[in-house]
Length: 311
Length: 280
Image (cartoon, rainbow over all chains, first blue to last red; front, side, top):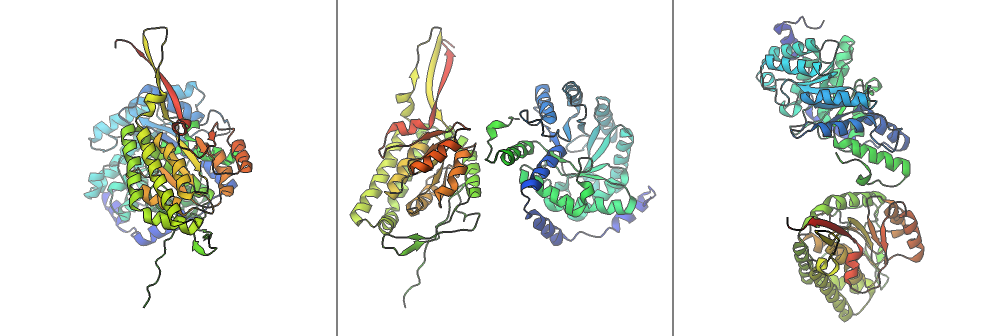
């Protein structure tokens, strides 16, 4: 163990992390974004990106009908083409988990997991007791992935142990039943140093995935932030031998954006992370653009939005 | 000391902005006197793709504007063209080699054409729509609605008038347009972008590409997001290519004579019929 669980050792470890070179990180992310991915590489990247999408709907206006539609799309993103892979997961609010699970099971999507946002998503402003109930509720309903938010207020005011304990408690609840994704909400963390610090904090506390954003705050998954997080999981793997996943979410709307993310993954964490087990993209509109680009590659002519589903 | 010339860079017009071609390419335009005039952008298929994205995004807003408002904006285009007429007259003279009088006439005809189509915007539904008799207690109305994104190949000459004559009816019907300017006479079409940019027309409703039509035609024809084509300006051979490429996606493809007619607006509109119970 690199820390012994005490506040002192946690603070010592986090304070000894090297600061992020802001200009360097932004330049590196911008440089990687210029890479041109074409033809067979592009086809591979599109299919990989589709299998990494956490197809998400987190609206107050979500209805069971909408969830069921989304499930159908998750299993068979393009009804006219069975070679399109299923998406990585469905991501919904707590109360929709049961509906999503049973719908997926009934349409042959047993292998598509349901992720639930928990712990007073998106603000995280609730007591630990409530957050525990929230999480347990999602687990009981059949969620196999939990997307929890950290208490940014506590993190920013330096109560790191509180954040640590909260993640640990939720992880204990998840046990072996569910993967834990920890949402850092990087748009509220202000600096890259904080992103790096929060990434390590979450990994040390037992996160299986670290996720950029709730999608409710802008900026969300910017390229430099994802770069910093990918560096964190890479270094954490070197340090401990444990692979932690990364999930950018929010603001990734086009195939180009998604491919840029894959380039970041390959060049930062390495090929091993190019799998839905270790990299996911939280998105909703992205999937349609991926499908349209896929049609373009296959047919040779530009596709129309009239040929993909309206979400 | 003589002043150094300040020449205009003729660029594309996409989504309300004036970018250079994504490809970085340009080509040379010579005047009627065989002297160099300008290096307009040589648009690539990716410029076309960007233009279609801009047009598709802008189209619902334009179609949902009231017909009266669309008419006002077309009229404003006429006003702006009037104010810039000197510039267009000069471009026409140097490109086409016509007399000043002929160029002046062409510009005023183009302005009148815009005014004429602006008037049609809010009258079209009354002329072409109908209230249909049905065997039940229903009102049954048919009204024209916009088609979507229309690609426009205007005739090369008269350069400004042909361009306006092709563009105005597409806009009057609430469509957005991708105007592919004539290869050898593109300057008035490009400058028209400056008129459009100052006419309250939402960015992206008109997009102007310059370059080789032959290079863009296969992509225009096969693009699933383009709903209609005015191919008045293309050759018979290119027409065949366009029609073949457009078979799969059910495009509306038309060639028009060089006259103004409300039928030109209706060609790029669809008739929608709605039923409504009487008494509610």
